[in-house]
Image 1: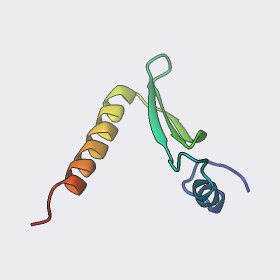
Image 2: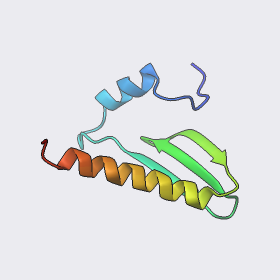
Image 3: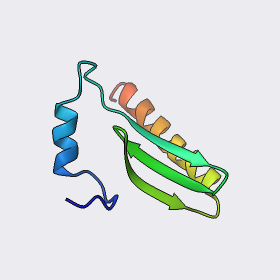
Length: 78
């Protein structure tokens, strides 16, 4: 299966179910100012790497989206 960074693959789901004893999965979004790029990594595998004119601003948007979603999940349902 080719890994072209287009999202979750069956192999990803299988790997998540076979996570070592920590029973944890992880994703990271990395901003690199050297080349103005963002990299999405899921459980140690690079899924997407893009170069943007304003990568720093895009990173801030990613962070805000994730933070806002966590707050929604945490807040009681009305």
